[in-house]
Every structure is written in structure tokens, then in C-alpha cells.
Image (cartoon, rainbow, N blue to C red; front, side):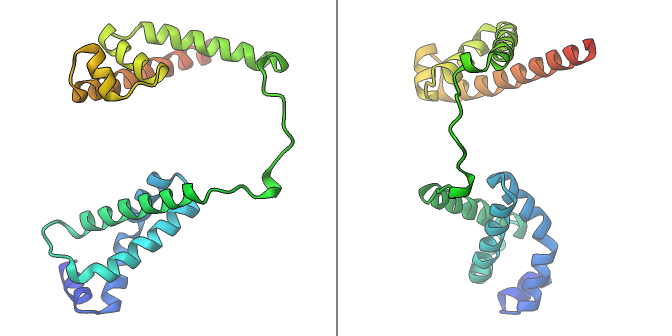
Length: 185
């Protein structure tokens, strides 16, 4: 790959095309994870390789080429998504008649929702108190990490770590509950 990089830096388009072929799948998968949409991911990949071609002469080799390319992909995805948010529109043919979203109009969904809430409450109660507190403050009350840290007398980093661990344990417990209920049926 080093020979291809050197040739591409010298302006060899074929060498750059070979680099694209070697890195495309990983670049596309990263773009897809960042955008969560196949069409958007393809646009981001195209922008990534355009930026890479324009900036290949500035690639110093301090990091691996793929790391440099991942950084370009992340920046391209961020730019693409922020531009997309500003220009968000919905085509007229996708607008449907307004449906009654009140739970009284859909009792079967209300029952399912109540059952889901009960499962979440049980799983939440199974968390260690220090993890439960952070999850509730963030996910129920919407507090920022800084506010959670101040509220609980912990650092912002500790709040982030506890939130990650709490959500992970909560997800695992809910998955276990779902698997147990599926086996019971």
C-alpha cells in the first residue's frame, strides 16, 4: 500500500483508484454506521474520496492511510448530516392522513406500552443505585452530563461511564426478559 500511496501523492490516478478499491468496503461500512442510510453513506463515501484525492499530497504518513481516510470519512459524514438537517424536507407523496395517535384510540398499543414500561421498571430496579440514578437523570429527566455530575457529586467522566454501564446492563436485562417471555410462549 505504501507504493500506491507514494504514487498517488505524485499524482498517479490509477494508484489512487487502486487505493479506493482496497479501502472502499471499510470506508462504506463506516459511512453507513455514521449515517444509518445506504444512500447517504454512498454520498459520504464519494465526498470522502474526493477530499482524499484533493488532500493526498498533504498526507504525511504519521498515521496509517486507513486512519487518515477514516478521519476524512467521519468529517464528511458530519458535514453531510448537518447540511441534511438544515435542508430536511418531506416529499408530498409521503405525507399520509393524520391518524389519531392518542392511546385511548388504540387500546391494544396502550396495553403493550404499559407492559413494556413495567418491564423497563423491573429492569431499572435491578441496576445498582449509582447506575440507576445516572440513567434516570439522563434518560428520564434529560439532564446534561455536567448537571448529573453536579447533582451526584461525581465528575462528568464518571457520569458518562456510569451512564454507559447502566444502559448496557439495562439493555442486557431487557434482552434476557424478552428471551424468557419468548420461550414461555
